[in-house]
View 1 (spheres, rainbow, N blue to C red):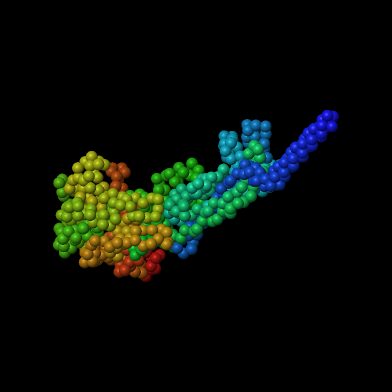
View 2: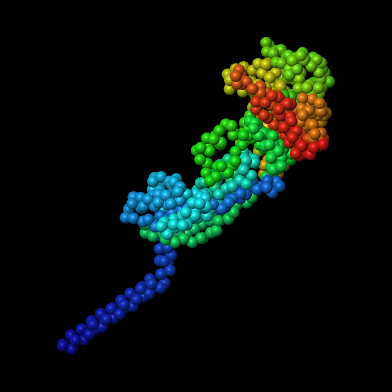
Length: 581
């Protein structure tokens, strides 16, 4: 019996030992699996929880003129930043206060006030704790030197080199080029980032229109953070890449010549190649130096330049009554309606209709005058009579055939359609009926008819070539053109009249000394009433008169006359292009 008890006891001890040994084996196996096999997995999971994805900005592409002149580029810029991790305190309020105090100390050392408020610092700590805070952007050499001299006193602060936009030609084509501002990088659909660095984004002009094209490809950083969210390390995952360059049709030589002629005026000019629509020059005055808007557009600059009516884009955004530059369109409308260019009209110096009296530039009248000479002398009464004969529909159909009343299709944010009026337009906008006098006014480019200089450059080019082109600023844009619905015989009549304008007519100053024959038309449009009454003076032209390669339209506000004020300015531009006799 005693032996049986001993046997049971031994077996029990053996079983306990076996269980213990098996437990140790299982425990050892699990420890080995956790420490050796699963270690990489847990390390990866822990790294993922502590990593933050940061999208960085790609450098912006350049904007280049047709001859290779760089109009918009990037330059090295130094910013002073502070890293929040060096100012950790017991709570966020104390952390913000520590950063703020440190910034004030640095501001005193570099003798430059801090542009950041306490709220801005607190917002950065709440939202972008793992990223450096940019305090001073685009600082000068003197500020950098002061900081470097005392850098040991200001741990956590450093100078970081980035890129800012620069405009090497300053004012040249300012309204065309536009400017940029800072905004968060845009990520692809589905891409999730914890932080996005600021990048340059187009705000106006071609910088805005081609913003998506010019922007560089963003890069990516992986930032490791501690338990509170402060950065402890970072590495580059994807390098940012520069955006492509944008090549323009703008010819700097012509652009400079135009801007020289507009200097000191409220004026605008468009020069295009009527064969393919390439915009050779597009200028508006007054202009401003684009570099004044870098690194950012301040409220003062917004009020002084960008938001000021004086600096608005007059070349393709502002609209004007075209004055007598519209008379070639009236002539073509009449010819298409069956009127003969040979029939003379007796100009007495005044056109009377339903109690309205419109005076001719020659107050005593031109006497009997035909279409060609009416264009040459810019006879108001002849074209008022012509418009009254053919009617509103025929006149404005011709205007629309030249693209008036519609946007030109220019690759640019500002492209005004202007106005080709009608009875319905007048009723809707002014609650007034359409009178016969409205038609007479429109026939000479007055009244509610409104155009842009770019539209009138298209008109001039279309008369010279017989085709209406879509203007474009990007060099590799496919050509879009269509024939205008007027016969070659009718176009020849108007071309001859426009040639006579420059050859001894009202626009003779536009052709003096130019090495090629020029065809054109003067215009003077009266605007305002009483004390605000003034004249906007026009000249449109194409050259050479046979097989033209250039079409131009210029308007000068508050001038004396199209022939005296604007024609000679256009003549100087044409000398730049074709040379002097």
